[in-house]
Length: 118
Image (tube, rainbow, N blue to C red; front, top):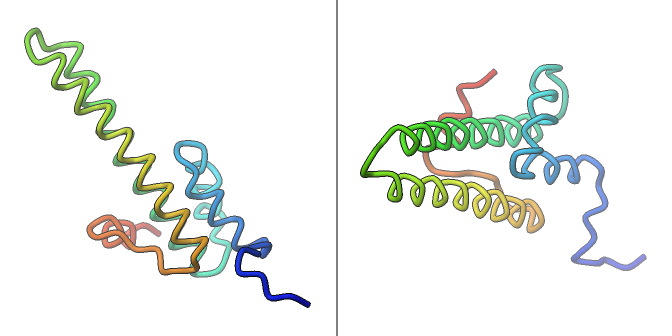
C-alpha cells in the first residue's frame, strides 16, 4: 500500500469540500446543522460556511440596493460589491486548500462569529 500525499478519499473529508463551495455549499452546510449530525469538525466547517455565505449575501444585497438607489455613488458601490464577491470566492478556495492540506479551518473574526451558531 502506497502512502500518497494527494489521496484525500475519506468521505467525511470530502464533505468539508462540499460545504466550502461558494454559494452552493451553503445548502448542505445548513442541512448538516439542521439535522445536528456530523463530527465536530464538520459542524464547525458548516457553521463557518454558513457565516461566510450570510455575510456575503447581506453585503452583496446591501451594496447592490444602494448602488441602484444612489445617483452619484453607483460605480464605487458596484466596485465594492464585486470586491466583496471576489473575496468570498477567494476565501472559500483558500479554505478548501487548507482542508486539502489538513490544516485547521479558522478565520479571524468569522470563526468567532460562527461559533455562536447552534
